[in-house]
Image (cartoon, rainbow, N blue to C red):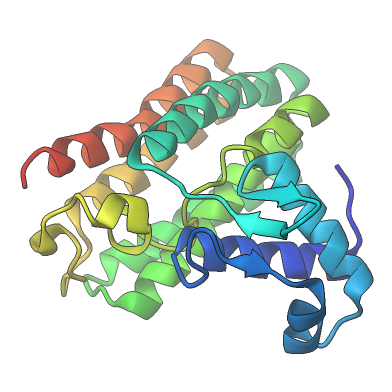
Amino acid sequence: MRTEPATMTVLSYVRERIVTGVIAANSRLRAEALATELGVSRTPVRSALAILSAEGLVSYSINRGYTVREITFHDVLDAIEARAVLESRACGLSVDHGWSAEGLAALGAMVAHGQAIVDGGLWSEAIEHDWYANNRLFHFTIVAASQNVVIRNALRMTLIHPIFGDIARLCPAVAQLVPQRHRAIPAKPPQHILKSQADHGHILAAITAEDAPLAERHMLEHVLDTKHRLATIATRR
């Protein structure tokens, strides 16, 4: 789905505020107030709210307008599982279609950037955001290379959790079930980030080797690792 830049700006802003709990469940979303806050017209705001409604993050009724839908822990796990299936297939398709030398170089640069972050040995909220932004670009690039618009649109339905930070810390539906020690920001890169970064290297290697089944399998396991981690730490309350 192609959207205007202003709509994308509003969409990203509102989505991230919803999934991090800044905008609480059952809150009404008023187009006029959001337009004023973001300095845009009401048209891109209304477009963004319509998209969020289609994605399931908000609901619409004639009487109340747009209202934030409550996201549960199981919703998040289900979304991650769906994303794993979609992204893994997209990864395999990207190999089937073939990568240009420039595309592989760009993907390699993303892996290198993520590795440089973790090799620095330090961790903070700002560093976490940098790593997750790079992570998002890595995944988005692979999905775009699949040339499958249906998968790309379907993946938007799975974005019901933060994408620029640790879900266990930033997603209210998850954080309330996770012990405090798992929500604190450590001084060094956490183990799940080190594992995820290593996974990126394995995925890149499989893509470079033009091994579609292996690339698909690596991506599936990589995304599902997040589900397994959340399910595990949520049971250790």
